[in-house]
Amino acid sequence: MTEETEAREVMLIAARIVEFANSELAGHPSIIQGAILADLLAVWLAGHILPGDEAATDALREDMLKIHVKQVRRLVEINHGIMHQPQTEPNNGH
Image 1 (cartoon, rainbow, N blue to C red):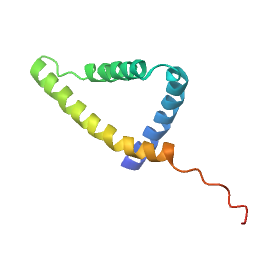
Image 2: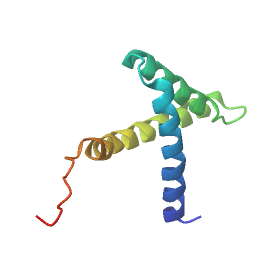
Image 3: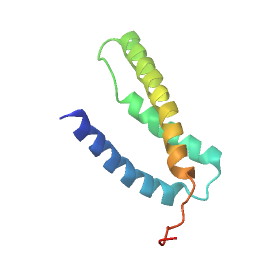
């Protein structure tokens, strides 16, 4: 799978999850939303194990979490721009 194909797949799946999450998370306090997202992240991390090596598993999860947080920080800026870009009026030839 190419990076472009992976990126398209990520965007399609993320869009479906965001649509679902917006309907499920909307209206709940941010502390509840954050706790739900934290639990989902913990489930994802808990699924990564190196059998028989607890220390290596812990290190793997720590590395994955650092990479994940770094990517989240990048995506915050991108999503902020998408969510808060000025809405332009149609030109209508004027």
